[in-house]
Length: 131
Image 1 (cartoon, one colour):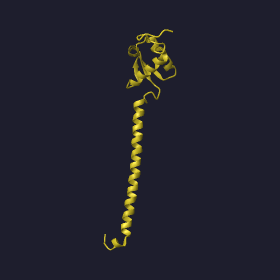
Image 2 (cartoon, rainbow, N blue to C red):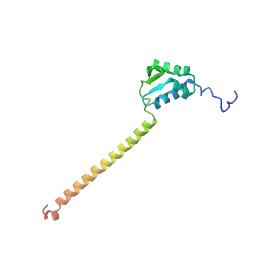
Image 3 (tube, rainbow, N blue to C red):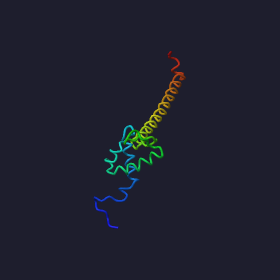
Image 4 (tube, helix red, strand yellow):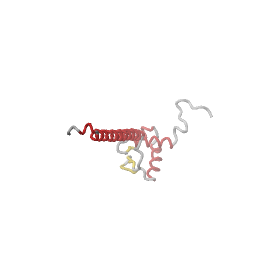
């Protein structure tokens, strides 16, 4: 098999699987999960028929629904939990762990202070001085 020229697309480049991933990315970028199929065909640089292949399957498994002519809406869950959200959750978990460490340290500090106050109050030398 001859190597492909730089402008020529490989079989993988035109695969329905890759196209589906790109289509899902478009859904993910849409703030309300609605995509115009004409725009999708333009952005993905494919025939509208290829977009219909994807939407027919996704509609069949009830992950999308027709919102209006040439517009579909994502109905599934999990698509919008993208890498940015996962990163934010990781950062928040780290902050929560740090706050828990700080809370434990403050609790220990308060216990140490209470013990020192008790020791000062119990000290016979200090008992001569009224509070």
